[in-house]
Image (cartoon, rainbow, N blue to C red; front, side, top):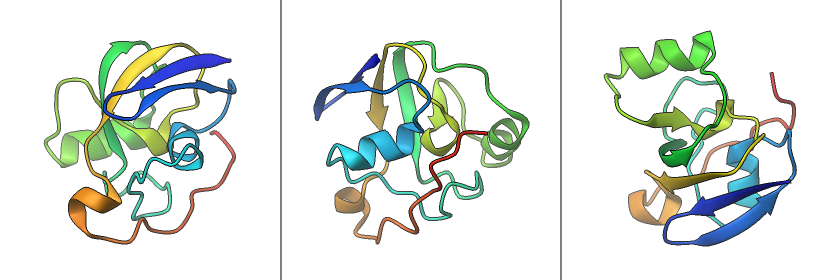
Length: 109
């Protein structure tokens, strides 16, 4: 189990290997994921405040670069939880007034 501190929401014990976007949603955080977890839209992005959320894969790196995102931004749909971290969701349903989008699959790539 990893301890994920979500700024403004609380701290959650998350099963190792679970997609971060699903862990957030399953714990009542209204994170956006408009493309359904396909690393295309960047609406599920989080700012990593501390900790290591693992390596960035090619799909995630490409869309982050294409969208001009920088710093400690990661896509929660591309992260399989494996260690403690502190994050801040960037876009939520309530902040943007949008539907969350289709639920991403459970499988980590």
